[in-house]
Image 1 (cartoon, rainbow, N blue to C red):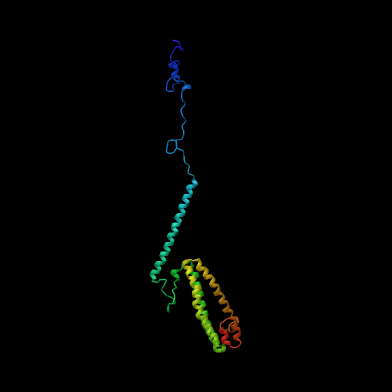
Image 2: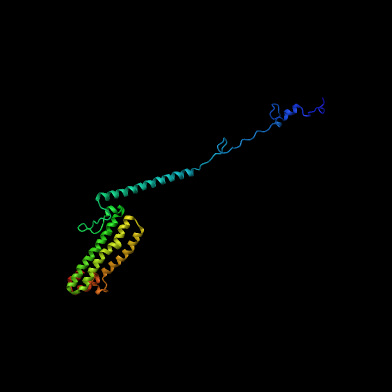
Length: 240
C-alpha cells in the first residue's frame, strides 16, 4: 500500500525514532539528562559552609579572658573574706573605739581595714598626724614659758585654742578622709583629702615662720618669734 493511502502517514518505525523510551531510538531523538544541581539545605548536594579560623581564635581568646576575669574575681573575694575573718577574730567592728589604748576615743585599725599595698602610706600619714598633735602640744608649752617671762596671757590662750581646734580638725578634715579613701578606694574622698591637706600645709608653714601678724607672732613657736624673743629671754627664745 502506498504511503499516501495509509491513514497513518507516520509509520511505526518513525514513531519509535521519536520515542525517547525506545531502545532503538537514535541519539537525535533522546532527551539529554539534566545536569546535577545543588538542591539546597539538608539535601545531597548541599553547599559547603566555610568557617573562618579567625572566628575560632577569637572565641578561644574570649574564653581565656573570661577565665582570667573569673580567677581575679575569686582572688578579690578571698581577700575580702580574709579581712572579714581577721576583723571577726579580733572582735573589732568599725564602730568600736580602740585608740588611744589608754583612753579610746576613735576607731583606728590600719592592719585589718586598709589594703596591704596601701598600709605603709597610711602609717606615714598617721605619723604625720601624730606629728602635728605633738607640735601643737609643744607650742602650748613653749608659749607658756614665754608668757611666764612676760609675754602676756593672751598668747597663752591663743596657743590653747590652736591645740583644741587643730587636733580634732586635722583628724576630721584630712586624716579621716584619707583613711576612708584608702579603705574604699574612693576618688571623691581622695579629692577631698588633697584639697584640705593643702590648707593644712599652709597652716604649718605659717606656724613655722610665725610672721608678726597676731601678737607679733608670739602665739606660735616659729622662726621669727624665736629671733624676737631670744634677745630678751634666752630660755623662752630657745624653746621657741
